Image 1 (cartoon, helix red, strand yellow):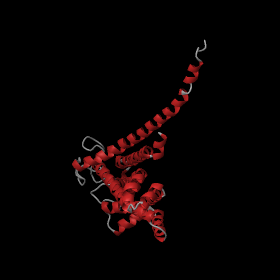
Image 2: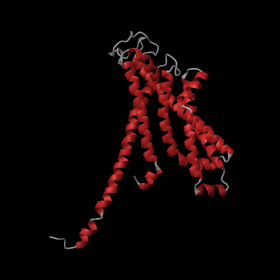
Image 3: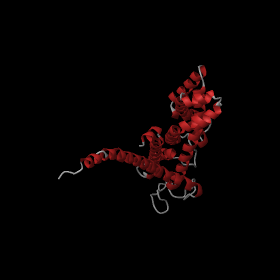
Image 4: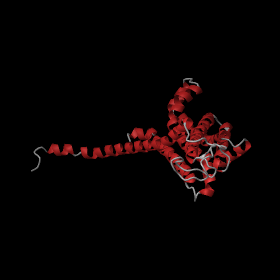
Length: 300
């Protein structure tokens, strides 16, 4: 039988298509949350391992009493290297070096890059062209090669590697900041603030930085992963943290000749290096989707 009131059927039909966009929005929000949570979990485990290394290590980093190339066991969870050092101790020390290199490089890149980017965005004429050309030259120069030159000019220490990587990455950060600040400066409310006599410092602190920080945070998260890889590359070449500090890159270099007899010496630092970079990239993807103003405006 047909409905006695035809309005009942017509009134119920519009609710069906409206549920599809809502379900799709909920699904996209859930995917963003899963990406961010997964990245935090993966990277957080390695950061936790690095924090524990400050308080406790199974053996001293320079302890060679374990025997040459001992297999994994109760005394040495991952075995020992060709000098008799505990591999698990080296992995823990390497996680600390990786986190320090990533955070230190990002801090330097953010400080120098944001300063140069804001100055380039506010500059006019030849000064803007000069700063932009300087940033373009640094970007075109390979990051690892620039870091090698800086480390070679100083000394092969972790501090030199962090400084070199941070300065190399500051050009990328500065270029991104310049584009973002230029975009904000073109807005009407910035023109109104300048017309009312607001100082450039207050405009930068009150309007520019709050509007660029979501994109900037995502870029800095990506730079963290690149910094970890760059530090591992420098240590692989012997330009990173010197012994007895065990960087993952240095462990990979030392394990080349003993991979067939003691594969844990290469597999452990290699897997952790990949996991840390993947975790940070997942965090960057989750932050990008979560902090995207356009996505928030669409309610997705």
